[in-house]
Amino acid sequence: MKFNASMIAEYLHGTIEGEKNITVTNISRIEDGKPGTLAFLSNPKYNKYLYKTGASLVLVNNDFELERPVSCTLIRVENAYEAFASLLTLYQQSIVPKTGIENPSFIDSSAKLGTDIYIGAFAYIGANVCIGDHSRIYPQVFLGDNVKIGNNVIIYAGAKIYDNCEIGDNCIIHAGVVLGADGFGFAPREDGTYEKIPQIGNVVLEDDVEIGANTTIDASTMGSTIIHKGAKIDNLIQIAHNCEVGENTVMAAMTGVAGSTKIGNNCMFGGHVGVAGHIKIGNGVKVGAMTGIDKNVKDNNTIMGLPAMPYDRALKAMVLYRKLPEIHDDVVALKKELKELKEQLKK
Image (cartoon, rainbow, N blue to C red; front, side, top):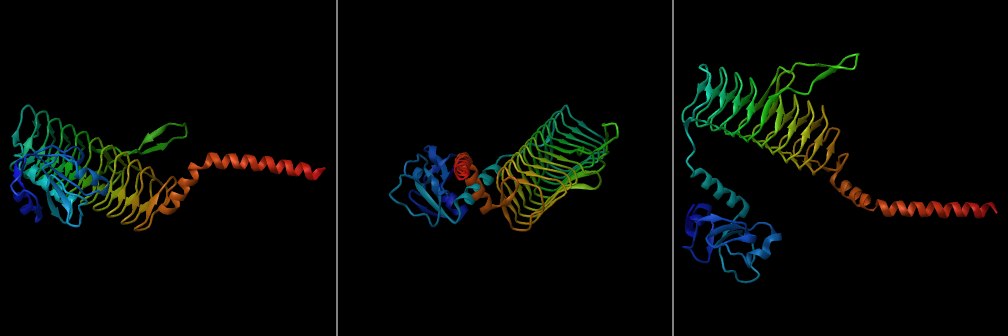
């Protein structure tokens, strides 16, 4: 990566304040920026670092107002965060991807391979697998029989895709992901043991889905567990059998979704959310971290807490929770006073 301010400003449709020919070769955080690096500022909490950063070039929003002079060159853009992300994407695209088939690896003779693909060493490609054009399968990936992989898909090392699963175009699956393992289905017997219910369905990822490292998505009992177009699932998440996650929904790490739950489009889940089974969460729902959802949620609600409740009510509950020791002491004191009053009235 080596760009000057003029090149970056032209690409981002931004305006320069400072040295137009200054060159950067790397990126940095604004709070510990170094000469020759590019940083960005979008969160007001970090404004103070702009005036002492060592970064040579900083992206800021058009409406950002300087409080005093700065030593770095600024590029003003409509949205500094999005502009920085765009530059990272440009940099990533400049890296030449791996191609070809490494050995040793196993590829069943019935598998259909697209053009310009990469298959890393020790990968296993099962019977009737279809891999689309420009896809990259990293070492030690397992693709079971009849798996379908779209175009421009990246599957990182050690991911396991069970039989019959389907992955759309432009998906990214990170290391350690398991798609299509058996759903947690067991029928209790009279003797107290459990009979396993066969899980004969699959997992379907639509286009532009990203699945974080060590996340597991279970196959459905019948039909498909579906992650719809554009959804982004973080690391260490469990999505159970027969679930659906709507388009462009995002989930932060440690979230768990129980079986047969349907989640709408454009939802946002904080970390460590727990969702009960067989419920429906509407479109545009925002869920605070560590929330427990045990019933249906209507469209465009913001919820938080355990059990989940409207956001403003949850904040009040949290305030009261923090005051519980004092409230307990007050109740004990009142009970003592009441007891003393009763004893005086008896005299």
